Image (cartoon, rainbow over all chains, first blue to last red; front, side):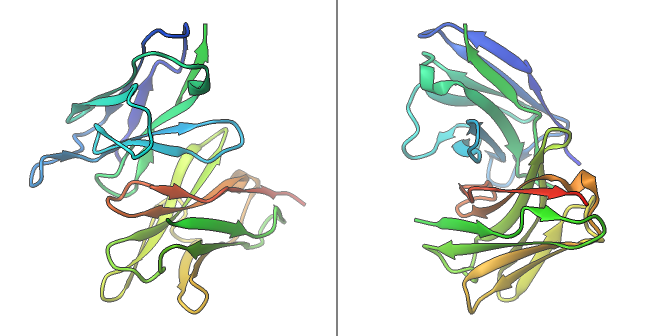
Length: 113
Length: 121
């Protein structure tokens, strides 16, 4: 199985400041035939299911604010929130869909400092 | 727009079968090039993909090895829904269970609201 490891486990950032969450996969999730990274980011708020933010590692889902961006390739990925808003408080997960079993990171809890 | 409505009991006795249903609107369960998944979430195991079913000229299933001997995911084309059956449950199967739709990629585009299932006598 591909192991997904996120860092940090928790993060406190001031409103308006940048938040950065990292995700590392135990093997590459870059599919060479189409040059796509099979990596997605979700946001989960209490009592809600995860919500898709970014897929193909860097493509923002429709309706997601442009302060959210994804980057990286191969085994190392980053989710960046450029200017933290109060409504961004949540747990963020990365997940690989390169191969089954699809696997998730352990989550990063983002709070306001 | 795809919407998923889950139903099923919130309490299951140990050694019994957990059964959940996910009613689909906005898409057909037998659409080509999409997949229908079950995922669970617990404090001890985090988010865990359990398996999926999809139609590509015929029906296919993929299951996680951790539950492969106990799980069945079935589509119901007459009701446009899918089901999850997990046999011989133990307290370790206590979790929030989600159904989820994979459309343009194998990522989980749309999630059901979740069903908290407790395994206890």
